[in-house]
Image (cartoon, rainbow over all chains, first blue to last red; front, side, top):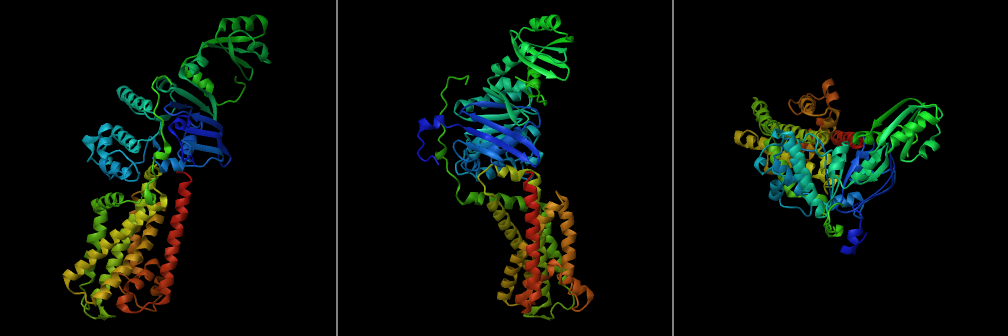
Length: 309
Length: 264
Protein backbone atom coordinates (compact mmCIF):
# COMPACT_ATOMS: atom_id res chain seq x y z
CA UNK A 1 0.00 0.00 0.00
CA UNK A 2 1.22 3.44 -0.87
CA UNK A 3 -0.10 5.25 2.13
CA UNK A 4 1.87 8.43 1.73
CA UNK A 5 1.46 9.14 -1.94
CA UNK A 6 2.21 12.78 -2.55
CA UNK A 7 0.64 14.47 -5.55
CA UNK A 8 3.97 14.45 -7.35
CA UNK A 9 4.10 10.67 -7.09
CA UNK A 10 0.50 10.40 -8.11
CA UNK A 11 1.32 11.93 -11.48
CA UNK A 12 3.73 9.13 -12.15
CA UNK A 13 1.41 6.46 -10.84
CA UNK A 14 0.12 4.65 -13.92
CA UNK A 15 -3.64 4.46 -14.29
CA UNK A 16 -3.33 0.84 -15.39
CA UNK A 17 -0.39 -1.46 -15.35
CA UNK A 18 -0.43 -4.95 -16.86
CA UNK A 19 2.68 -6.97 -16.23
CA UNK A 20 3.16 -10.08 -18.39
CA UNK A 21 -0.52 -10.92 -18.13
CA UNK A 22 -1.89 -14.13 -19.57
CA UNK A 23 -5.32 -15.70 -19.34
CA UNK A 24 -6.27 -19.23 -20.31
CA UNK A 25 -9.75 -20.70 -20.48
CA UNK A 26 -9.00 -24.39 -20.40
CA UNK A 27 -6.93 -25.01 -23.49
CA UNK A 28 -7.81 -21.65 -25.05
CA UNK A 29 -5.16 -18.98 -24.63
CA UNK A 30 -7.25 -15.81 -24.70
CA UNK A 31 -4.42 -13.52 -23.59
CA UNK A 32 -0.88 -14.60 -24.33
CA UNK A 33 1.26 -12.08 -22.50
CA UNK A 34 0.35 -8.39 -22.39
CA UNK A 35 2.53 -5.65 -20.94
CA UNK A 36 0.76 -2.33 -20.89
CA UNK A 37 0.98 0.89 -18.96
CA UNK A 38 -1.60 3.66 -19.27
CA UNK A 39 -0.73 7.14 -18.08
CA UNK A 40 -3.30 9.19 -16.21
CA UNK A 41 -5.41 11.35 -18.48
CA UNK A 42 -4.80 9.32 -21.61
CA UNK A 43 -7.59 8.28 -23.95
CA UNK A 44 -6.57 4.90 -25.23
CA UNK A 45 -8.26 2.79 -27.86
CA UNK A 46 -8.03 -0.92 -27.42
CA UNK A 47 -8.36 -2.00 -31.00
CA UNK A 48 -8.66 -5.49 -32.35
CA UNK A 49 -10.98 -7.92 -34.06
CA UNK A 50 -13.49 -10.00 -32.12
CA UNK A 51 -11.75 -12.68 -30.12
CA UNK A 52 -8.47 -10.76 -29.91
CA UNK A 53 -8.62 -10.74 -26.13
CA UNK A 54 -9.96 -7.20 -25.56
CA UNK A 55 -12.88 -8.15 -23.36
CA UNK A 56 -10.82 -10.70 -21.45
CA UNK A 57 -8.21 -8.04 -20.72
CA UNK A 58 -10.84 -5.50 -19.65
CA UNK A 59 -12.43 -8.09 -17.35
CA UNK A 60 -9.06 -8.56 -15.65
CA UNK A 61 -8.59 -4.79 -15.23
CA UNK A 62 -12.02 -4.71 -13.60
CA UNK A 63 -11.15 -7.61 -11.34
CA UNK A 64 -14.02 -9.67 -12.77
CA UNK A 65 -11.52 -12.39 -13.56
CA UNK A 66 -8.03 -13.22 -12.42
CA UNK A 67 -5.05 -13.48 -14.77
CA UNK A 68 -3.63 -16.97 -15.17
CA UNK A 69 -0.16 -15.46 -14.77
CA UNK A 70 1.12 -11.92 -14.37
CA UNK A 71 -0.26 -8.98 -12.39
CA UNK A 72 -2.75 -6.20 -12.96
CA UNK A 73 -2.79 -2.97 -10.98
CA UNK A 74 -5.06 0.05 -11.21
CA UNK A 75 -3.68 3.29 -9.77
CA UNK A 76 -1.37 1.26 -7.58
CA UNK A 77 -4.15 -0.93 -6.23
CA UNK A 78 -5.38 -4.40 -6.97
CA UNK A 79 -8.40 -4.19 -9.31
CA UNK A 80 -10.99 -5.15 -6.69
CA UNK A 81 -9.63 -2.57 -4.26
CA UNK A 82 -9.73 0.08 -6.95
CA UNK A 83 -13.39 -0.81 -7.59
CA UNK A 84 -14.17 -0.65 -3.87
CA UNK A 85 -12.77 2.90 -3.80
CA UNK A 86 -14.84 3.94 -6.77
CA UNK A 87 -11.72 4.60 -8.84
CA UNK A 88 -12.87 2.52 -11.79
CA UNK A 89 -16.11 2.43 -13.74
CA UNK A 90 -17.11 0.58 -16.84
CA UNK A 91 -19.90 0.87 -19.34
CA UNK A 92 -20.94 -2.32 -21.03
CA UNK A 93 -22.77 -2.48 -24.29
CA UNK A 94 -25.86 -4.40 -23.23
CA UNK A 95 -27.69 -5.61 -20.16
CA UNK A 96 -26.82 -4.61 -16.64
CA UNK A 97 -30.12 -2.88 -15.93
CA UNK A 98 -33.22 -3.89 -13.99
CA UNK A 99 -36.23 -3.28 -16.19
CA UNK A 100 -38.72 -2.70 -13.41
CA UNK A 101 -36.75 0.09 -11.72
CA UNK A 102 -37.13 3.69 -12.78
CA UNK A 103 -34.18 5.62 -14.16
CA UNK A 104 -33.83 7.61 -10.95
CA UNK A 105 -34.09 4.50 -8.76
CA UNK A 106 -31.37 2.81 -10.78
CA UNK A 107 -29.03 5.76 -10.29
CA UNK A 108 -29.91 6.14 -6.60
CA UNK A 109 -29.42 2.40 -6.03
CA UNK A 110 -25.97 2.51 -7.61
CA UNK A 111 -25.03 5.74 -5.83
CA UNK A 112 -25.86 4.23 -2.44
CA UNK A 113 -23.17 1.60 -2.91
CA UNK A 114 -20.26 4.05 -3.10
CA UNK A 115 -18.62 5.90 -0.24
CA UNK A 116 -18.20 9.08 -2.30
CA UNK A 117 -20.57 9.95 -5.12
CA UNK A 118 -21.84 12.90 -7.03
CA UNK A 119 -25.44 13.90 -6.26
CA UNK A 120 -28.00 11.80 -8.13
CA UNK A 121 -29.74 14.84 -9.63
CA UNK A 122 -26.49 16.29 -10.93
CA UNK A 123 -25.59 13.03 -12.66
CA UNK A 124 -29.08 12.66 -14.15
CA UNK A 125 -28.79 16.19 -15.44
CA UNK A 126 -25.36 15.87 -17.00
CA UNK A 127 -26.39 12.61 -18.69
CA UNK A 128 -29.43 14.40 -20.06
CA UNK A 129 -31.94 12.00 -18.50
CA UNK A 130 -33.62 14.23 -15.93
CA UNK A 131 -36.71 14.31 -18.16
CA UNK A 132 -37.10 10.55 -18.06
CA UNK A 133 -36.03 10.08 -14.42
CA UNK A 134 -39.35 8.58 -13.38
CA UNK A 135 -39.68 6.32 -16.40
CA UNK A 136 -39.24 2.57 -16.00
CA UNK A 137 -36.03 1.28 -17.57
CA UNK A 138 -38.07 -1.16 -19.66
CA UNK A 139 -39.78 1.80 -21.36
CA UNK A 140 -36.48 3.53 -22.26
CA UNK A 141 -35.03 3.35 -25.76
CA UNK A 142 -31.64 1.78 -26.39
CA UNK A 143 -30.02 5.21 -26.51
CA UNK A 144 -31.66 6.28 -23.24
CA UNK A 145 -30.52 3.09 -21.56
CA UNK A 146 -26.99 3.75 -22.77
CA UNK A 147 -27.13 7.25 -21.23
CA UNK A 148 -28.34 5.70 -18.02
CA UNK A 149 -25.36 3.32 -18.02
CA UNK A 150 -23.09 6.33 -18.41
CA UNK A 151 -24.78 8.16 -15.59
CA UNK A 152 -24.19 5.14 -13.35
CA UNK A 153 -20.56 4.91 -14.41
CA UNK A 154 -19.91 8.59 -13.70
CA UNK A 155 -21.43 8.57 -10.19
CA UNK A 156 -18.18 7.85 -8.31
CA UNK A 157 -16.21 10.30 -10.49
CA UNK A 158 -13.92 7.48 -11.60
CA UNK A 159 -10.26 8.02 -12.36
CA UNK A 160 -10.40 5.26 -14.92
CA UNK A 161 -13.29 4.63 -17.26
CA UNK A 162 -13.52 1.46 -19.33
CA UNK A 163 -15.86 1.42 -22.29
CA UNK A 164 -16.82 -1.55 -24.40
CA UNK A 165 -17.74 -0.50 -27.94
CA UNK A 166 -19.14 2.74 -26.51
CA UNK A 167 -20.78 4.33 -29.53
CA UNK A 168 -22.43 1.29 -31.08
CA UNK A 169 -25.86 2.36 -32.22
CA UNK A 170 -25.19 6.09 -31.81
CA UNK A 171 -25.72 8.47 -34.70
CA UNK A 172 -22.96 10.82 -35.88
CA UNK A 173 -24.17 13.70 -33.73
CA UNK A 174 -24.50 11.52 -30.64
CA UNK A 175 -21.04 10.19 -31.24
CA UNK A 176 -19.55 13.69 -31.45
CA UNK A 177 -21.28 14.89 -28.28
CA UNK A 178 -20.22 11.75 -26.49
CA UNK A 179 -16.58 12.07 -27.38
CA UNK A 180 -16.33 15.76 -26.60
CA UNK A 181 -17.66 14.99 -23.12
CA UNK A 182 -15.14 12.19 -22.73
CA UNK A 183 -12.31 14.49 -23.80
CA UNK A 184 -13.34 17.20 -21.34
CA UNK A 185 -13.09 14.70 -18.51
CA UNK A 186 -9.77 13.34 -19.74
CA UNK A 187 -8.37 16.84 -19.61
CA UNK A 188 -9.22 16.88 -15.95
CA UNK A 189 -7.20 13.71 -15.47
CA UNK A 190 -9.59 10.86 -16.14
CA UNK A 191 -8.08 7.96 -18.03
CA UNK A 192 -10.28 6.33 -20.63
CA UNK A 193 -9.72 2.94 -22.20
CA UNK A 194 -12.21 1.95 -24.86
CA UNK A 195 -12.48 -1.27 -26.78
CA UNK A 196 -13.48 -0.98 -30.39
CA UNK A 197 -13.06 -2.76 -33.64
CA UNK A 198 -13.35 0.44 -35.70
CA UNK A 199 -9.98 1.86 -36.59
CA UNK A 200 -11.73 5.03 -37.75
CA UNK A 201 -13.10 5.72 -34.28
CA UNK A 202 -9.85 4.81 -32.57
CA UNK A 203 -7.91 7.15 -34.85
CA UNK A 204 -10.32 10.01 -34.43
CA UNK A 205 -10.77 10.03 -30.69
CA UNK A 206 -7.88 8.28 -28.98
CA UNK A 207 -4.52 9.74 -27.99
CA UNK A 208 -3.08 6.33 -28.28
CA UNK A 209 -4.03 3.13 -30.03
CA UNK A 210 -3.15 -0.28 -28.68
CA UNK A 211 -3.67 -2.93 -31.32
CA UNK A 212 -4.27 -6.46 -30.11
CA UNK A 213 -4.37 -9.68 -32.02
CA UNK A 214 -4.47 -13.23 -30.74
CA UNK A 215 -4.03 -12.09 -27.17
CA UNK A 216 -0.93 -10.03 -27.85
CA UNK A 217 -0.20 -6.38 -28.48
CA UNK A 218 0.91 -6.02 -32.09
CA UNK A 219 1.18 -2.24 -32.23
CA UNK A 220 1.07 0.60 -29.74
CA UNK A 221 1.29 4.24 -30.67
CA UNK A 222 -0.52 7.41 -31.64
CA UNK A 223 -3.05 7.39 -34.43
CA UNK A 224 -0.53 8.89 -36.83
CA UNK A 225 2.05 6.30 -35.89
CA UNK A 226 -0.42 3.56 -36.59
CA UNK A 227 -1.33 5.27 -39.85
CA UNK A 228 2.33 5.41 -40.80
CA UNK A 229 2.30 1.67 -40.59
CA UNK A 230 -0.47 1.83 -43.11
CA UNK A 231 1.20 4.30 -45.47
CA UNK A 232 2.40 3.03 -48.82
CA UNK A 233 1.27 0.12 -50.88
CA UNK A 234 1.38 -3.59 -50.87
CA UNK A 235 2.97 -5.50 -53.71
CA UNK A 236 1.85 -9.06 -54.01
CA UNK A 237 3.43 -11.60 -56.34
CA UNK A 238 3.65 -15.33 -56.78
CA UNK A 239 7.22 -16.21 -56.02
CA UNK A 240 8.08 -19.54 -54.45
CA UNK A 241 11.16 -19.50 -52.21
CA UNK A 242 11.33 -15.72 -52.13
CA UNK A 243 14.52 -14.21 -50.78
CA UNK A 244 12.84 -12.24 -48.02
CA UNK A 245 16.11 -10.74 -46.76
CA UNK A 246 16.89 -9.23 -50.14
CA UNK A 247 13.35 -7.83 -50.39
CA UNK A 248 13.48 -6.39 -46.91
CA UNK A 249 16.77 -4.70 -47.76
CA UNK A 250 15.20 -2.69 -50.60
CA UNK A 251 14.75 1.01 -49.91
CA UNK A 252 11.36 1.93 -48.47
CA UNK A 253 10.26 -1.59 -47.61
CA UNK A 254 8.37 -1.79 -44.33
CA UNK A 255 7.58 -5.45 -44.14
CA UNK A 256 7.79 -8.66 -46.07
CA UNK A 257 5.29 -11.41 -45.58
CA UNK A 258 5.24 -14.87 -47.09
CA UNK A 259 1.95 -16.69 -47.52
CA UNK A 260 2.44 -20.02 -49.21
CA UNK A 261 3.79 -19.30 -52.69
CA UNK A 262 2.91 -15.63 -52.44
CA UNK A 263 5.04 -12.85 -51.16
CA UNK A 264 3.54 -9.62 -49.85
CA UNK A 265 5.82 -6.62 -49.66
CA UNK A 266 4.59 -3.56 -47.86
CA UNK A 267 6.58 -0.54 -49.05
CA UNK A 268 6.51 3.21 -49.41
CA UNK A 269 8.08 2.86 -52.88
CA UNK A 270 6.04 0.13 -54.49
CA UNK A 271 7.47 0.87 -57.94
CA UNK A 272 10.98 -0.05 -56.84
CA UNK A 273 9.71 -3.28 -55.36
CA UNK A 274 7.77 -4.13 -58.50
CA UNK A 275 10.75 -3.34 -60.71
CA UNK A 276 12.99 -5.53 -58.59
CA UNK A 277 10.54 -8.42 -58.50
CA UNK A 278 9.98 -8.41 -62.27
CA UNK A 279 13.56 -7.92 -63.32
CA UNK A 280 15.62 -9.71 -60.69
CA UNK A 281 13.34 -12.62 -59.76
CA UNK A 282 10.92 -15.08 -61.33
CA UNK A 283 7.93 -13.40 -59.73
CA UNK A 284 4.65 -13.43 -61.66
CA UNK A 285 0.99 -12.46 -61.14
CA UNK A 286 2.11 -9.18 -59.66
CA UNK A 287 -0.48 -6.95 -57.99
CA UNK A 288 -0.11 -3.56 -56.40
CA UNK A 289 -2.74 -2.37 -53.93
CA UNK A 290 -2.83 0.73 -51.81
CA UNK A 291 -3.50 0.22 -48.17
CA UNK A 292 -6.26 2.11 -46.47
CA UNK A 293 -6.61 2.40 -42.74
CA UNK A 294 -8.88 -0.59 -42.65
CA UNK A 295 -6.34 -2.64 -44.59
CA UNK A 296 -3.62 -1.64 -42.20
CA UNK A 297 -5.81 -2.71 -39.38
CA UNK A 298 -6.64 -5.98 -41.08
CA UNK A 299 -3.05 -6.75 -41.91
CA UNK A 300 -1.89 -5.85 -38.44
CA UNK A 301 -4.57 -7.91 -36.83
CA UNK A 302 -4.88 -10.72 -39.36
CA UNK A 303 -5.15 -14.07 -37.75
CA UNK A 304 -2.16 -15.78 -39.32
CA UNK A 305 1.15 -15.69 -37.57
CA UNK A 306 3.55 -15.78 -40.47
CA UNK A 307 6.45 -13.45 -40.88
CA UNK A 308 5.49 -9.97 -39.88
CA UNK A 309 7.75 -7.14 -39.11
CA UNK B 1 -1.12 13.62 -25.16
CA UNK B 2 -2.36 16.06 -27.72
CA UNK B 3 -3.52 18.56 -25.11
CA UNK B 4 -1.23 20.91 -23.27
CA UNK B 5 -3.26 20.80 -20.08
CA UNK B 6 -1.49 19.11 -17.24
CA UNK B 7 -3.94 16.57 -15.89
CA UNK B 8 -4.78 16.84 -12.25
CA UNK B 9 -3.23 13.83 -10.61
CA UNK B 10 -5.64 11.46 -8.95
CA UNK B 11 -4.79 10.52 -5.42
CA UNK B 12 -6.19 6.99 -5.16
CA UNK B 13 -5.79 6.90 -1.40
CA UNK B 14 -8.06 9.87 -0.89
CA UNK B 15 -10.98 7.64 -1.92
CA UNK B 16 -12.84 5.75 0.74
CA UNK B 17 -14.19 2.23 0.76
CA UNK B 18 -17.85 2.10 1.86
CA UNK B 19 -18.45 0.57 5.30
CA UNK B 20 -20.15 -2.82 5.73
CA UNK B 21 -19.42 -3.96 2.19
CA UNK B 22 -21.95 -1.53 0.75
CA UNK B 23 -24.86 -2.55 2.98
CA UNK B 24 -27.32 0.34 3.10
CA UNK B 25 -30.95 1.24 3.61
CA UNK B 26 -31.40 2.97 0.26
CA UNK B 27 -31.02 -0.34 -1.56
CA UNK B 28 -33.41 -2.06 0.84
CA UNK B 29 -35.94 0.75 0.39
CA UNK B 30 -35.74 0.68 -3.42
CA UNK B 31 -35.88 -3.12 -3.54
CA UNK B 32 -38.87 -3.20 -1.23
CA UNK B 33 -40.70 -0.60 -3.28
CA UNK B 34 -39.86 -2.60 -6.38
CA UNK B 35 -41.39 -5.75 -4.93
CA UNK B 36 -44.48 -3.98 -3.65
CA UNK B 37 -45.00 -2.59 -7.15
CA UNK B 38 -44.96 -6.05 -8.66
CA UNK B 39 -48.60 -7.06 -9.02
CA UNK B 40 -47.88 -10.77 -9.20
CA UNK B 41 -45.77 -10.69 -6.05
CA UNK B 42 -48.46 -8.75 -4.24
CA UNK B 43 -51.14 -11.19 -5.39
CA UNK B 44 -49.19 -14.21 -4.16
CA UNK B 45 -48.10 -12.45 -0.99
CA UNK B 46 -51.23 -10.72 0.18
CA UNK B 47 -54.36 -11.90 -1.56
CA UNK B 48 -53.88 -15.53 -2.48
CA UNK B 49 -52.92 -16.99 0.94
CA UNK B 50 -55.56 -14.89 2.66
CA UNK B 51 -58.19 -16.05 0.17
CA UNK B 52 -57.12 -19.67 0.65
CA UNK B 53 -57.42 -19.23 4.38
CA UNK B 54 -60.91 -17.85 4.04
CA UNK B 55 -62.02 -20.77 1.88
CA UNK B 56 -60.33 -23.53 3.91
CA UNK B 57 -60.79 -21.91 7.29
CA UNK B 58 -64.53 -21.77 7.04
CA UNK B 59 -65.07 -25.52 7.16
CA UNK B 60 -67.69 -26.89 9.59
CA UNK B 61 -65.23 -28.20 12.20
CA UNK B 62 -63.41 -24.87 12.47
CA UNK B 63 -63.89 -24.59 16.19
CA UNK B 64 -62.78 -28.14 17.06
CA UNK B 65 -59.82 -28.39 19.37
CA UNK B 66 -56.34 -28.38 17.84
CA UNK B 67 -53.57 -28.37 20.43
CA UNK B 68 -53.65 -25.08 22.32
CA UNK B 69 -56.09 -23.53 19.89
CA UNK B 70 -58.74 -24.46 17.35
CA UNK B 71 -58.76 -25.84 13.80
CA UNK B 72 -59.15 -22.37 12.29
CA UNK B 73 -55.91 -21.31 14.01
CA UNK B 74 -54.20 -24.43 12.67
CA UNK B 75 -55.31 -23.62 9.14
CA UNK B 76 -54.34 -19.98 9.54
CA UNK B 77 -50.77 -20.88 10.53
CA UNK B 78 -50.57 -23.30 7.59
CA UNK B 79 -51.77 -20.73 5.09
CA UNK B 80 -49.38 -18.12 6.44
CA UNK B 81 -46.55 -20.59 5.84
CA UNK B 82 -47.76 -21.26 2.33
CA UNK B 83 -47.96 -17.54 1.52
CA UNK B 84 -44.58 -16.77 3.03
CA UNK B 85 -42.98 -19.72 1.22
CA UNK B 86 -44.36 -18.57 -2.13
CA UNK B 87 -43.14 -15.05 -1.48
CA UNK B 88 -39.68 -16.13 -0.43
CA UNK B 89 -39.37 -18.51 -3.38
CA UNK B 90 -40.28 -15.79 -5.86
CA UNK B 91 -37.76 -13.48 -4.17
CA UNK B 92 -35.11 -16.17 -4.56
CA UNK B 93 -35.99 -16.71 -8.21
CA UNK B 94 -35.46 -12.98 -8.74
CA UNK B 95 -31.81 -13.32 -7.76
CA UNK B 96 -31.30 -15.75 -10.62
CA UNK B 97 -33.18 -13.50 -13.01
CA UNK B 98 -31.04 -10.53 -12.05
CA UNK B 99 -27.95 -12.51 -12.91
CA UNK B 100 -29.39 -13.39 -16.30
CA UNK B 101 -30.02 -9.69 -16.92
CA UNK B 102 -26.39 -8.81 -16.17
CA UNK B 103 -27.39 -6.80 -13.10
CA UNK B 104 -25.16 -8.90 -10.86
CA UNK B 105 -22.25 -8.15 -13.15
CA UNK B 106 -23.13 -4.47 -13.00
CA UNK B 107 -23.12 -4.66 -9.21
CA UNK B 108 -19.67 -6.23 -9.30
CA UNK B 109 -18.45 -2.97 -10.82
CA UNK B 110 -19.43 -1.28 -7.57
CA UNK B 111 -17.99 -1.72 -4.07
CA UNK B 112 -20.93 -3.96 -3.11
CA UNK B 113 -19.70 -7.20 -1.60
CA UNK B 114 -21.47 -10.22 -3.17
CA UNK B 115 -22.11 -11.73 0.26
CA UNK B 116 -23.74 -8.46 1.36
CA UNK B 117 -25.91 -8.57 -1.76
CA UNK B 118 -27.17 -12.03 -0.80
CA UNK B 119 -27.64 -10.86 2.79
CA UNK B 120 -29.76 -7.91 1.64
CA UNK B 121 -31.82 -10.21 -0.58
CA UNK B 122 -32.36 -12.60 2.33
CA UNK B 123 -33.47 -9.70 4.52
CA UNK B 124 -35.93 -8.61 1.85
CA UNK B 125 -37.27 -12.16 1.61
CA UNK B 126 -37.81 -12.09 5.38
CA UNK B 127 -39.55 -8.73 5.22
CA UNK B 128 -41.87 -9.88 2.45
CA UNK B 129 -42.38 -13.18 4.25
CA UNK B 130 -43.42 -11.17 7.29
CA UNK B 131 -45.84 -9.17 5.16
CA UNK B 132 -47.38 -12.40 3.86
CA UNK B 133 -47.67 -13.88 7.36
CA UNK B 134 -49.14 -10.66 8.68
CA UNK B 135 -51.67 -10.55 5.84
CA UNK B 136 -53.02 -14.00 6.67
CA UNK B 137 -53.00 -13.32 10.41
CA UNK B 138 -54.80 -10.01 10.01
CA UNK B 139 -57.38 -11.77 7.83
CA UNK B 140 -57.74 -14.35 10.57
CA UNK B 141 -58.28 -11.70 13.22
CA UNK B 142 -60.80 -9.91 11.05
CA UNK B 143 -62.66 -13.14 10.36
CA UNK B 144 -62.67 -13.93 14.06
CA UNK B 145 -62.65 -17.73 13.92
CA UNK B 146 -59.02 -18.65 14.79
CA UNK B 147 -58.42 -18.94 18.47
CA UNK B 148 -55.16 -19.51 20.36
CA UNK B 149 -53.19 -17.79 23.16
CA UNK B 150 -51.39 -14.62 22.04
CA UNK B 151 -47.91 -15.98 22.79
CA UNK B 152 -48.64 -19.07 20.66
CA UNK B 153 -49.89 -16.81 17.92
CA UNK B 154 -46.61 -14.84 17.96
CA UNK B 155 -44.39 -17.91 18.30
CA UNK B 156 -46.04 -19.55 15.30
CA UNK B 157 -45.56 -16.42 13.21
CA UNK B 158 -41.87 -16.11 14.10
CA UNK B 159 -41.13 -19.79 13.45
CA UNK B 160 -42.98 -19.58 10.13
CA UNK B 161 -40.85 -16.62 9.15
CA UNK B 162 -37.61 -18.52 9.72
CA UNK B 163 -38.95 -21.56 7.92
CA UNK B 164 -39.45 -19.43 4.81
CA UNK B 165 -35.66 -19.27 4.35
CA UNK B 166 -35.85 -22.86 3.09
CA UNK B 167 -37.97 -21.63 0.21
CA UNK B 168 -35.86 -18.59 -0.48
CA UNK B 169 -33.00 -21.04 -1.14
CA UNK B 170 -35.32 -23.19 -3.26
CA UNK B 171 -36.27 -20.10 -5.26
CA UNK B 172 -32.63 -19.30 -6.06
CA UNK B 173 -32.03 -22.91 -7.06
CA UNK B 174 -35.09 -23.13 -9.32
CA UNK B 175 -34.35 -19.67 -10.70
CA UNK B 176 -31.11 -21.04 -12.06
CA UNK B 177 -32.57 -24.28 -13.35
CA UNK B 178 -35.51 -22.61 -15.09
CA UNK B 179 -34.30 -19.18 -16.17
CA UNK B 180 -36.39 -16.05 -16.50
CA UNK B 181 -40.06 -15.54 -15.91
CA UNK B 182 -40.75 -19.27 -16.19
CA UNK B 183 -39.33 -19.92 -12.72
CA UNK B 184 -42.59 -18.84 -11.07
CA UNK B 185 -44.53 -21.05 -13.48
CA UNK B 186 -42.67 -23.98 -11.93
CA UNK B 187 -42.53 -22.72 -8.36
CA UNK B 188 -46.24 -21.88 -8.11
CA UNK B 189 -47.69 -25.33 -8.86
CA UNK B 190 -44.64 -26.99 -7.28
CA UNK B 191 -45.17 -25.28 -3.95
CA UNK B 192 -48.90 -26.02 -4.11
CA UNK B 193 -48.09 -29.71 -4.54
CA UNK B 194 -45.54 -29.62 -1.72
CA UNK B 195 -48.05 -27.83 0.49
CA UNK B 196 -50.65 -30.49 -0.19
CA UNK B 197 -48.14 -33.24 0.64
CA UNK B 198 -46.78 -31.24 3.54
CA UNK B 199 -50.04 -31.28 5.43
CA UNK B 200 -50.52 -27.58 4.81
CA UNK B 201 -53.80 -27.57 2.89
CA UNK B 202 -55.64 -30.65 4.08
CA UNK B 203 -54.59 -32.84 7.00
CA UNK B 204 -53.39 -36.21 5.71
CA UNK B 205 -54.25 -39.32 7.64
CA UNK B 206 -51.30 -40.76 9.47
CA UNK B 207 -50.34 -44.25 8.40
CA UNK B 208 -51.64 -44.00 4.85
CA UNK B 209 -49.20 -44.57 2.00
CA UNK B 210 -49.53 -40.98 0.88
CA UNK B 211 -48.55 -39.84 4.37
CA UNK B 212 -45.42 -41.98 4.19
CA UNK B 213 -44.41 -40.29 0.97
CA UNK B 214 -45.41 -36.88 2.29
CA UNK B 215 -43.08 -37.18 5.26
CA UNK B 216 -40.15 -36.93 2.85
CA UNK B 217 -41.33 -33.81 1.01
CA UNK B 218 -39.90 -30.32 1.69
CA UNK B 219 -42.97 -28.63 3.14
CA UNK B 220 -43.69 -31.35 5.69
CA UNK B 221 -40.93 -30.55 8.17
CA UNK B 222 -41.28 -26.78 8.18
CA UNK B 223 -45.07 -27.09 8.53
CA UNK B 224 -44.66 -29.21 11.66
CA UNK B 225 -42.16 -26.70 13.04
CA UNK B 226 -44.36 -23.70 12.27
CA UNK B 227 -47.33 -25.27 14.09
CA UNK B 228 -45.27 -26.62 16.97
CA UNK B 229 -46.27 -23.84 19.45
CA UNK B 230 -49.91 -24.58 18.62
CA UNK B 231 -49.82 -28.38 18.56
CA UNK B 232 -47.19 -28.78 21.27
CA UNK B 233 -45.91 -31.72 19.27
CA UNK B 234 -42.74 -31.79 17.18
CA UNK B 235 -41.61 -35.17 15.79
CA UNK B 236 -37.82 -35.34 15.39
CA UNK B 237 -38.33 -36.50 11.80
CA UNK B 238 -39.84 -33.11 11.00
CA UNK B 239 -36.73 -31.29 12.21
CA UNK B 240 -34.48 -33.62 10.21
CA UNK B 241 -36.69 -33.08 7.18
CA UNK B 242 -36.51 -29.28 7.44
CA UNK B 243 -32.76 -29.16 8.04
CA UNK B 244 -32.05 -31.65 5.27
CA UNK B 245 -34.14 -29.83 2.67
CA UNK B 246 -32.64 -26.50 3.65
CA UNK B 247 -29.19 -28.03 3.16
CA UNK B 248 -30.17 -29.52 -0.20
CA UNK B 249 -31.63 -26.25 -1.52
CA UNK B 250 -28.71 -24.13 -0.30
CA UNK B 251 -26.23 -26.59 -1.80
CA UNK B 252 -28.18 -26.64 -5.07
CA UNK B 253 -28.33 -22.85 -5.21
CA UNK B 254 -24.62 -22.52 -4.39
CA UNK B 255 -23.75 -25.14 -6.99
CA UNK B 256 -25.70 -23.42 -9.78
CA UNK B 257 -24.40 -20.04 -8.69
CA UNK B 258 -20.77 -21.12 -8.86
CA UNK B 259 -21.37 -22.62 -12.32
CA UNK B 260 -22.84 -19.32 -13.38
CA UNK B 261 -20.01 -17.16 -12.04
CA UNK B 262 -17.54 -18.85 -14.35
CA UNK B 263 -19.19 -17.21 -17.32
CA UNK B 264 -20.18 -13.87 -15.80
